[in-house]
Image (cartoon, rainbow, N blue to C red):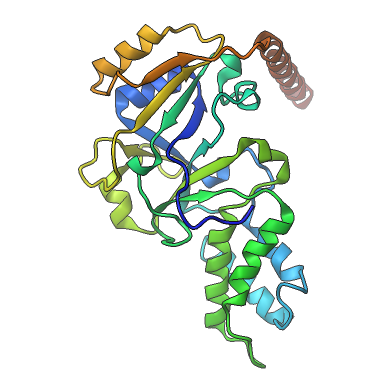
Length: 300
């Protein structure tokens, strides 16, 4: 899959619990989480940088000193831990069993929220970095390398002394590209990601709250500064085992000033979600037991 140069979906989907859906509607906010909190443990900018710098076919003429300089830039300028970047995650897949079966969809008890992506922005992040914009996530390693190769191909060939300015530019370019990559094991999510950079104070101050510092920020859905288009909600799909009804959704929306005439339906995927919930419960209990035993051993 190649990187698209436009926002190609009219609807994107967010799988979550009923409780989170209720907070979105009542608080008129959409939460963006720190990039450090993603579930892909390999989603580390440093991994992608080292991958690029170690691939002799992608960068053939850069000295080891220049490569170290690039890594230094990424570390010093706070790109390594992505502290300045926050994301909201969506999928292009509707009524997807894989996402219902996880905590995303609360193991069949949650909600699949269909949203109009243009409500937030038409921008693509890679075209306007340090802004609010959309990116499509790529999972295949070769496609990731192709995306990185496009960055290096735009640079002038380095001379004997590859200057500090060049390495700084390359570090920033790789930072933005890394926001679009995940491990191939996550390909079933078909993720589209809405990225906001805290570097742009104007975007941040006009549209976001920051309740507890840098762990998350909340987008104000009623912000007068918003430059998006249309209504936020396109459809609401209740999980097969969600305890709430279509009428509950309509009342929640209407009581809080949202359009309640959108499509509201319920998933009928013939799957026994209780098995997944039981497995999850057993894992949590096992982890808790291990933690308690570790504490006892430490005390002893």
